[in-house]
Length: 350
Image (cartoon, rainbow, N blue to C red; front, top):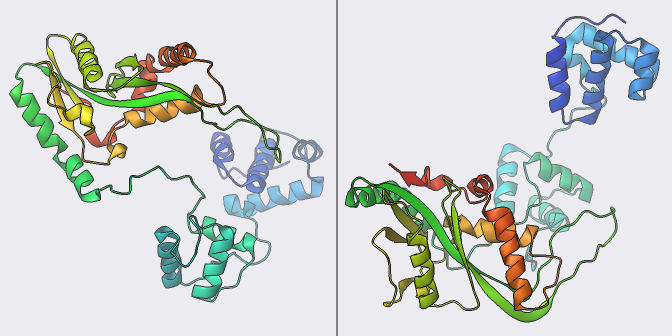
């Protein structure tokens, strides 16, 4: 089978690997097999189409190149909205549900109703989903945000960070700064569930414990180096935090100064707090956990190790916490990813 040399074979294979449309990917495969010397009947058996259809796609490729592999059946799908209407629909979806919608999240049926009532556009539910995808939307789970979160304070903290880190470096000449993000998480018998692989259409079951013993996991992670320090405790108060800070201070090399970023919890601001000279504390804006990437670590540990199971007592909780810490948190490469802090650009400063 003759195939025109519009593109090199390796380029066609690269296009096939990156092609998301299954039909177009199969057409590329037909062309590739033709170039590799397969006969039309062999190609037809390989891709599951008739010999005539395979020959037709090769002929179209020979005449038009890649454009000949486009699906030209029917009219081109056009969005049933003007540019101004598209902007208005996006604004409405981005704003989320109103009190009149009487739901906590806009689903397909809600968007279908909004299109009809607010834009005079009657569409089937499948068309609504098609439209949302064409507008660039996916149905995603949002990240939690505190209702008192102040975006102005959050943005100010991020913009002021370079000057803040320079000032700390100037106050400790000759020392390399190591920035750690610190936080605490309660881990106990009030269990959670996480996703599992299961047969489509089934409703898998998993253990979710509802008892009351717990412990505190206290941690600090440097996103640049991946180094982490941790402490388990049955309670959480200022003396425990003092113990943790003392533990961290002993791990800091003589030529380094630790910059510990944490929230404004009461045991972080108490008058009895004791801070070593080689640790500098930086407090986050109120209600801004998204600025503390160690929050991602708690989510990772819960979703990978601490869900879908029960723990008999405190000792079992302690064993599970230590096992997860040793498996994940001592993996410095993993911590660089899980606790990445892009807004700081670097987690240390020379």
